[in-house]
Image (cartoon, rainbow, N blue to C red; front, side, top):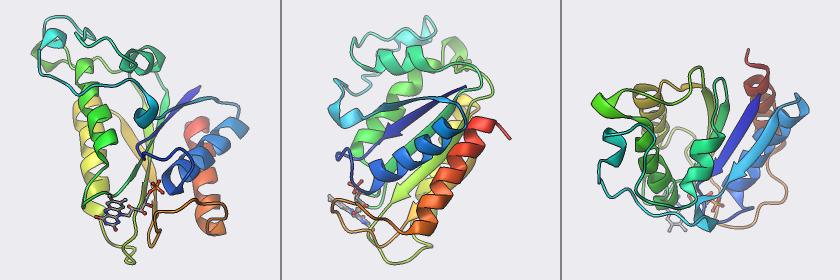
Length: 188
Ligand SMILES: Cc1cc2nc3c(=O)[nH]c(=O)nc-3n(C[C@H](O)[C@H](O)[C@H](O)COP(=O)(O)O)c2cc1C
């Protein structure tokens, strides 16, 4: 079982990265092979709508680090998708990454993402209301399911999180992240 993290924060080890890694830690404990992509540090360009992938599945005219992700996903894999809220939505880094997943939709928009993939979402933001930005999580969830058939099995929301290095997050949220990693890897 392969579990693939995507940290959409520009920071590798702040709030979002910390929690994405907690989920991966849980998955690793359950025996999964884990890997982490960090769009900020990848050579990555935005989708230019050339439609090469609509002629040939998985073809992309942009030769950059997205190929690593396309090559890594496999049937039954798990994804851990994390983002900070920036200006009321996902980070630009995560948006670019999600847009580039368009290559999984081939001719006639047929879905070529490996089957039975599942996801855990991580979202962190500063607003002090635990109910804020539900629509952003729903937006990610619906994109994953509607385009690629990826089922979201749970999500972590960290609210009231100022933009600073995280060393000691709330124990309950860390436990939830770890437990979701275990669940993702056990495929239950
Ligand atoms: C440029 C910028 C825009 C932000 N926009 C929002 C926002 O719209 N709503 C919010 O609640 N927090 C906002 N925040 C706070 C971040 O979402 C929050 O600190 C998050 O945990 C940062 O994630 P990171 O530590 O992984 O970088 C913003 C922070 C920055 C730097």
